[in-house]
Length: 415
Image 1 (tube, rainbow, N blue to C red):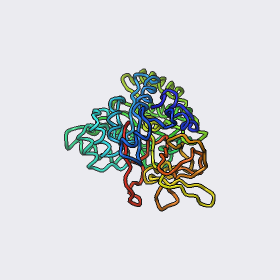
Image 2 (tube, one colour; image 1 turned 60 degrees about the vertical axis):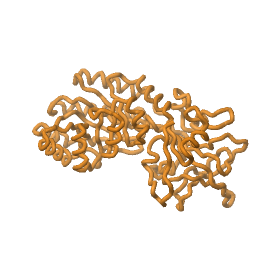
Image 3 (cartoon, rainbow, N blue to C red; image 1 turned 90 degrees about the vertical axis):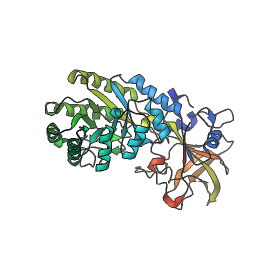
Image 4 (cartoon, rainbow, N blue to C red; image 1 turned 90 degrees about the horizontal axis):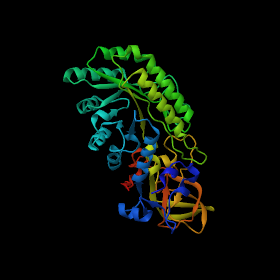
């Protein structure tokens, strides 16, 4: 696909320009023209994921991280089975957030020992499924802890547990804050000593902690500060633990740029700090390991969402391109997936044109929310041309209301 060593580090404003094209000006993916890739998967709308870009991102992380740090993939970012199978041989573990994701992870061949199960409100059937599979539970509440203790005693198989902590601080520059103040996620940090005491008197197998402050962060110092404060918090509980922890999952939160002006995360600063923490952990708790759990950062920039122009429509002097995909398939690109102020994703036409035009790109749904690009300058498009949304490898198809207005589903392919 692209020169992944450089393109994956571009600011968003350069994404469309940096993506490779052939001599005819057609976008390339997996070494083939976009139009050929679309025909290969059966047409539009479709998501296309570049396996070489995913491999390059993992290799980049491996080159910067100590061998003592485990690299996990958060399946919720993109649970497409072929993509998860591809990542199973590249990363050290998976984090899942539902029983269905657990099935995908196990089918991909990841060892249950390297799968963790997070998320609030796990049902008893999910807890039993995870216990039978032998995965690690990131426990989110006292109810969950006690249910697992009861199941462990009844079955004679101790559940593997780590305590997910609602940290006493926020990662303020994260787009979605996962800790600090009242949260549905994790156990309030002031209650952790009592939970550790319960584990001591139970049939549970204690393995560590899950500490995640927030997602989609582009400020290295915010990540560094959160990791440091999380580490110190764990060390304050050391004398109260039933046994030394095996794993400290410091979450992820590494962001990728979407809107013009977004700056690329200073990855080296974050990984240097993680490496230093890992060295300290080896001294403080010999044998324990740090894990980081990344989703968007691994797959987000490797994906394209592609739709076809159905119609050009001029309304009171403004051009609308109506395409065969929309917010029901790519909710995030429409601005309806957590954006406070709507910003365009990086977009382009699949071909180079001789003319430029200012246009808005909308889907076929009967709602004004179905807006994929608002007043952007692109190569002039005609009916049948391909329209591309970049940075679409994470939180795309599976994060969208695909049954809304009952339009056909979108295709996916790993190229």
